[in-house]
Length: 118
Image 1 (tube, one colour):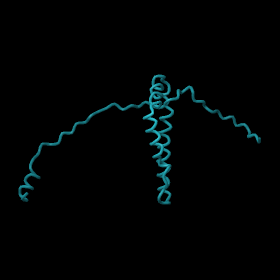
Image 2 (image 1 turned 90 degrees about the vertical axis):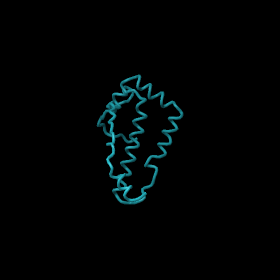
Image 3 (image 1 turned 45 degrees about the horizontal axis):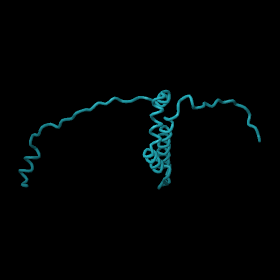
Image 4 (image 1 turned 180 degrees about the vertical axis):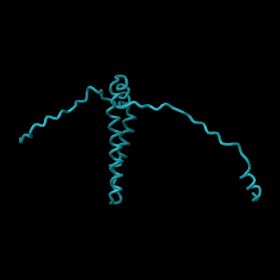
């Protein structure tokens, strides 16, 4: 293509690009709210009994950043690796906890009793 023709096509006026914003609602449901509704807990349980989903979760667990060595020894890389691992583990724990009703979780109370030597 000759240079003049190339420049003409490159700088000729074109229709402006159409940008369309697609809005969707953001879900602000939190884990403690989820666990108060029996139908949502049943939904989570029905997903967990699906063998395909369980396989997907097992593969995700195998891909946890905690399963891989840190290639460099500096503190910044170690902090990044630890943050990734913790976030990954928290996500998986949240998925698992969605099957448990809120009233099934036992809260531990501090007693401040002296330790016993057995």
